[in-house]
Length: 498
Ligand code: UD1
Ligand code: CA
View 1 (tube, protein in one colour):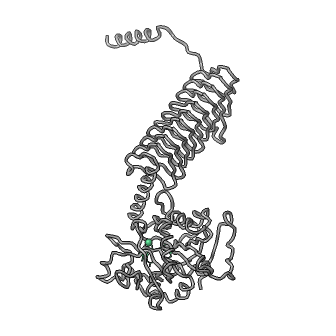
View 2 (cartoon, helix red, strand yellow):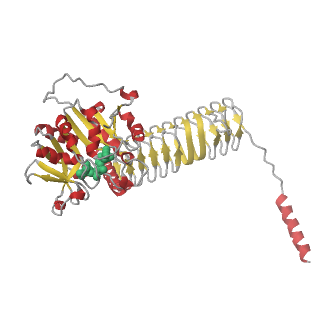
View 3 (cartoon, helix red, strand yellow):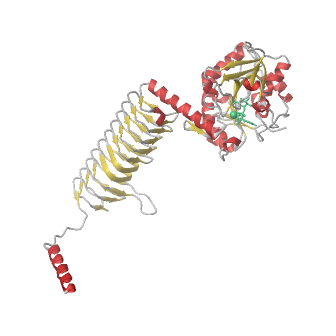
């Protein structure tokens, strides 16, 4: 017997509470769990990363399936069956609050469900999802659930019609008009006639739990892969006169599985285009959506315009009436309303308040906090700073570990020297300060309110409020110096030729 391990992230939800065995099954309010098969290696991807952690739409495959599942039942009733690189998968998704079941050896989809027996035993029905089919929508899972319950079926499966049914398993119905299914035949075992069937098994099922576990030990490994196929349950149950039914998905794209790199890219494109269409429906203009890369969890407000070749990644949020010009890559950053991002900006883990202007070619590194109406211009790099309301750093500047007040002007070429080779230090620039071009501020240092820094000053000491700091050597003009040098050179050339 393989040991079943059920784990939960103690931080999010505490340990698994055993369900009451006393409560009788009520058909009007059945207890429903969702199991997601996610233990496979994904051999066809030829990758070190386990299949379900490969990303589409900026998130692991499994994260999408969990998100859909958790809309149908609370996360505590969702169980991800993990195996290959289980620790890595569990770590990446523990924040979702689902339970994890370990399938130590991956001996097929049927075997995955055998390993979940203990976790599922107190439920009436289980909806089984494939962890590598991330386009599935909660509504479709609900449709499968409702169909299964309405038909009082032992097993229900979701199907789709595909023009190119590829390597999917095919569904053999009792007759073309019947809901009832005789068998699912895996690709490698298809006869020439069966190959022509365009109705495929989508890899999503509903089972009556007692019937599933009352029959699951009948699964055999006499197939080309030597695995326990969950799909064989259809024929097994049919033979024992249990009802096996199929319902077709409205949108065949929803069931696409990511088994190869090419399939993953196809799914990614579907997901991102759907995201663009959703945003457009909500009042966002996206020019050339095919060229934009917008992750699933990104939010954009109405009347914002996104130009071609923009990437909005991770948890990025953009407010209303903003404009993101081409070639900007923005990750985990919050932009307010009326923000202008000129071409070629790169931003990570930062915040930009309303009506600020950035770029072209600004680089906001993590912890940059740009105030309302502020300007960060060409070739300006920031890191861990606050730039106050209406302040400007328009050209060629590095601002790191700095607190900059309101209405400050940072001249071209200003640099905060925040690093002494060992530690980082802070620069404080108070409201209304004017920093002349090409100044260096050697931190830790503070420039008081309203002070001026003369161009090219190296500020090493604090500057008092309303003062002028000048820290550069004086200019000396040597009059006629060049004229004399020229004359001397000409003299030399003459004597060497004679
Ligand atoms: C499976 C179905 C096929 C269907 C297709 C739909 C079987 C035998 N075949 O094929 O009929 O058309 O899905 O996408 O089920 N997994 C485990 N443990 C294992 C093996 C697999 O958890 O031991 C997981 C995988 O990680 C994956 C899912 O189950 O998320 C499906 O497995 P996969 O190998 O991708 O099955 P397919 O060949 O796509
Ligand atoms: Ca698959």
